[in-house]
Amino acid sequence: MSDRDIAGSARALAEAFDHSFALPAGVRADDGRPALAVRLGGDPYVLLLGGLSSVARRKVVVPLPGGAHAQLGLAGIRGALVGVFSLPALLGYEVGLERLAWLAVTAGKRPVALAFEELDGQIVVADADVAAAPPGARRHVAGLARLAGEPAPLGVLDLGSMLDRFAASKDPE
Image (cartoon, rainbow, N blue to C red; front, side):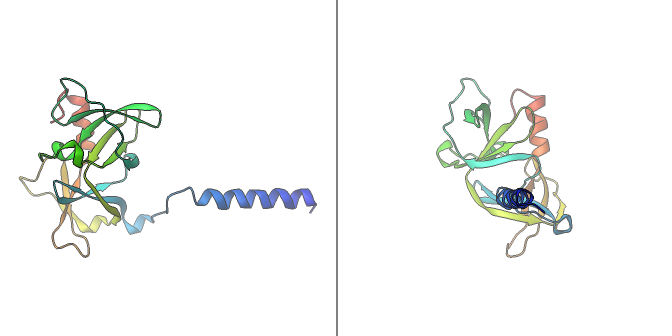
């Protein structure tokens, strides 16, 4: 093995090592699904990470005239204008823009940002811990998750139903 081969191997190892720190920690399939523990209107919910491209502190939101109640406006995110909606308003809560500190940005060709108040952390939700939502549950709640340390089950938010509603209606409420 020549010095050039050794240097090339060392460089490749160093790049792979550095790249590993840029990736999110992996979750084994049998551990469950990665999710965010969030609060909407003071109530705890689970927002599954599948379907999201990023989560960030709220940016400046420029209001649009005549928008739906849940529509907050537009924000510049990663060089693109993205529609921003109030996640609490989509579930029927009344929460002012000043309390919405976080944005969950959806993946896909036409991303939207869902603004919410509190981010409690990242969790893993096992499918076995999720039951169907009872009749009369808030809209866009797909199920209830029982998590260790939580006194009551948390609503599992249905990102797909929210996105379907955006696509089907000019008024996503």
